[in-house]
Amino acid sequence: MSNRYAFIGRGSGRWRVRSIHAVRGETLDAVGHLDIVAAEAPAPAAPTEWVLRGLISNVRYATRAEVTALQAKQEPLNRPAASRAALIPIKKSSAWWALAQDERRAVFEDRSRHTAIGLNYLPAIARQLYHCRDLGEPFDFLTWFEYAPEHAAAFEELVAALRTTAEWTYVEREIDIRLERA
Image 1 (cartoon, rainbow, N blue to C red):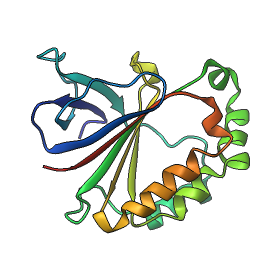
Image 2 (image 1 turned 180 degrees about the vertical axis):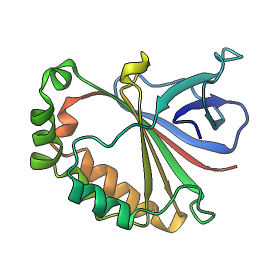
Image 3 (image 1 turned 45 degrees about the vertical axis):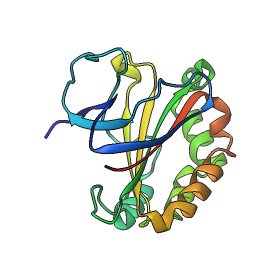
Image 4 (image 1 turned 180 degrees about the horizontal axis):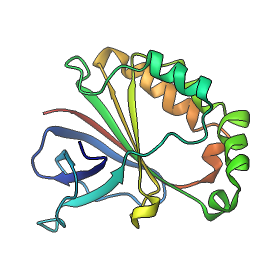
C-alpha cells in the first residue's frame, strides 16, 4: 500500500464538493468533485482541475501515551456511515518552521492541547494527516476528516476549537473543503 496520495479536484469523482472556503489566505478554484488516489497522480488534465499531494508519515509532536489513546478511540476511514468529509489544506508560517521540534511540541500540545481536543471528538470523527512540506507542495499538511451527517455539528465544534488555539496563529493559509459521498 502506498503512503503517497493525491487529492484531485475535478468535474467528477467519489466525493461531491459541497463548498470551498478560504479560512485564511488564497482559496482554490471551484471544482465539482474530489477523488483521492494512492501513489503519484498526473498533472491536472484540464484547467478546471487541481491536484494536492501528500504522504502519510510518522506521527509527530505526540507522546507514546497520546498515540496509544488516539489509536484506541479512532475509527477507520471509509466507514459506510461516514458519508461526509472535509479536506483542510494548511500552510504554516516560516515562524512555525523556525521553531525547534520541542518548541513546536510546546505550542502544539502544551499550549494548544491539539491531541486532547481531537480525542473529545473520537470515535465520531475519523482523521488522517498527510504531510506535504517536503514534497514541494503549496501546503504543509492536508488533513482529511470523515464523519456521519449526524456528527456535522460536532465537526464544526472541533474545527472551531482548533482555530482558537495558539497553534493556529501560525497558520498563514487554510482552505476548508466540505464534501459528501457522490
